[in-house]
Length: 133
Image (cartoon, rainbow, N blue to C red):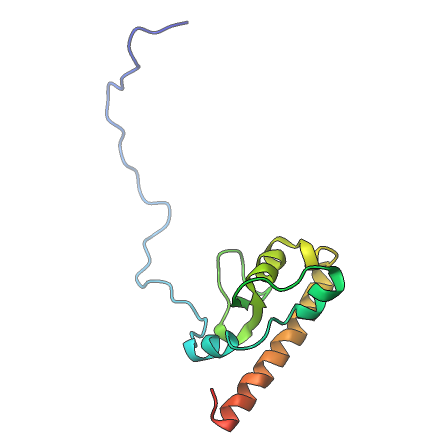
């Protein structure tokens, strides 16, 4: 059935009561921001370089800090304390779970990330003790 002109509302819509009250304060992220740590992580080698050589996916591109934490939901970045140095290629592969990370399940990925976080934190603390970071 064709209409000659679009439907028009005869009475305006009334705005009802808010479903949830407005927040008094803005939400604050509890994530620790540490630009010095991220700058130091960019100087480290890709942590997945061993995986890449084993699986045939070599390192590609600059080093990027990967925020590795399962404790947060999608779209919520974890603290800068939990970053891993990954090259651009391995970072994309880890996010998409393909390439060098294709055969990783949740448990093995979590174990690999925990080990990588510990290594990165150790390297950062050692560099701070030397006064390099």
